Image (cartoon, rainbow, N blue to C red; front, side, top):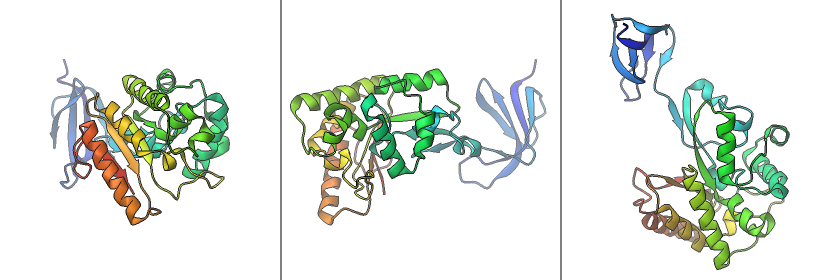
Length: 281
């Protein structure tokens, strides 16, 4: 009986530790790397000649906008072609769930304007067999995925789902029942497998009419309330995208808000490494 399930022979190992690449054989047993050696003598149940190829752990892409593309390309090309095996979607507080049917075209046009995803590709390729975030997750599961996906609940469509998409871009506060509904949506999304939630204060990113995104005008109360929901869960993520269009005072306010959210959620200080509130410039 073969000692290993798989032996990958003669490849160039890049193991992610920072040491120089090297040629070696690599053996897999029960789904784990069992041995790496210049020459592995026992045979595997299956063997692969990796001469001229890189053998490496799967790369993790922490910030993508494959929310639409995964509908027609479950391998997230080109990322999946070049070693990315895990990625996140729902970044920058924008995505496609939750979305009411009447807001689908508006959300696609905003994704086209802000993230340069071709509008016609979305119109032809998105199934739209969901409305809520859990239904979106179920849709991806039914389709099947060729990469591991950590899906964040995007703040802007979620606020639009509660207030109406156009009012959500204008109103700077919410009523108590509206805030409770937002908290409920995040809680339901987390229970359904969300990796966390995301929002943005990058003022340069605007819809095609030049007006604000929902996350641009939302009150700090809303973000702190969502951080409370996050405190109920374990290691998950809150993502904030910033830009250059903020004044010094606005940046100070965002920093204070970020520290508050990290504290409320129990995720530590936002400037420390590890689980917490991530920032993207």
